[in-house]
Image 1 (cartoon, helix red, strand yellow):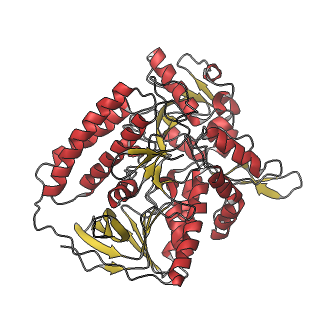
Image 2 (tube, one colour):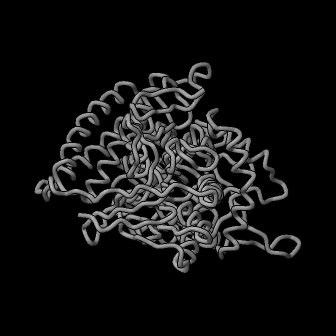
Image 3 (tube, helix red, strand yellow):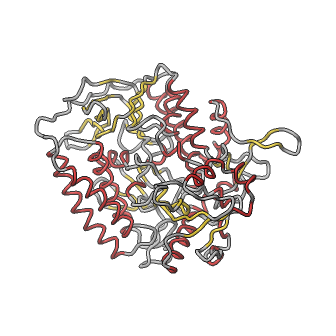
Length: 542
């Protein structure tokens, strides 16, 4: 059975940049719980190498950043949202600096220190502010230190959210979300939490693929829980594959930042030949979807296990100064990037779709907010431009904090607490091998059939397999006590279904969704987000 319900003003699930920034902004006027299934710092933010896109250079402009984002989004961005986020870029950076984040600087011609700005694919100017090549680590560590010092924030590490708790109307539809259940992993017991506002900051679902740059925690928990609670999702077919992850059996998910290409790195085939100009006149600085498809195409054409990324021509001093973490880590795997090319492959990296939210981070279910990669805001469209994601996290978490504050000050009804978690009808599992097998099967067929290049036939095969897996997982979930592996598998399966259904609904190639059956973009019938409603029927948003 669960412990007594714990009550707060706001529950935040997830502890990346969006979740921690929100917690800090709420802590002055609300009792906040941060619930995270690993250590506080274990998030996509911590592993982000590149930086944050913001207009900070006098030669750059808000309009240029907006234009670049719209181009990368391939016609599906919400222009008003793009402007809203871009216009708040400088403010977001200044907030982090005030928190204590130390971004890399350089000495300007005037003799004064200024931010060292780098350039990444899709950007027309240098506008990526960074902390060497470990920006995420600098941000996450700083936010974590501040969060741990706040008495109004209570931390629940190693707690895996099971499901949201919702009040219901008479017809069974969700009235509002007022709490959640979470598995205390160390104590192996399910606890209940309640609050008038619950915020999903759980990140994306790239772990649904066999190869990913993401940590193991990125299993789509927030998207799946929101879907089960009645939220709409959008653009789930658009998964960004990062072009350059280190190819090594022990590297697992080590990403080589796009800034390496931004600073002059060359992509080479196994014979040492550059190939990107065959695919895009921008070469190595083309958007990620173009680069990832080019690498995938060349690997398949040549029967090669990997391609290569070479920046050795820049010299060791330059490399060690600009990419100290990558240099150190790749050397540990036996590669000296100052002397030789690095073997690389594409890997699932970022979920561009997710829970549909408004400008304040509200979902379409009352009481439930979502911020960060778990969401669809309209910023990314059919493809995310590099380094816009951390900017979105910061801007939307601040907007959500302002909205929640106003609602708390106006007064809210007391939340209905979840009942005790009932385990009277379940037993301990003696078949954990089923979870392991289904986990591996899911990630393999998603990679093979719903990866960088798709077809209707491949998607239909994936649909058949996910239908079978869903029924097996539901039966298993109903008979055995929950575990972290089971919860993650259950959520991955829900997200896989959403990705497949969304991909089947888009009868064109656009941005990150590329299908051989519809190789061209359809700007007449398909220039809109793909929306899925909780009845599992895809609908279209004009």
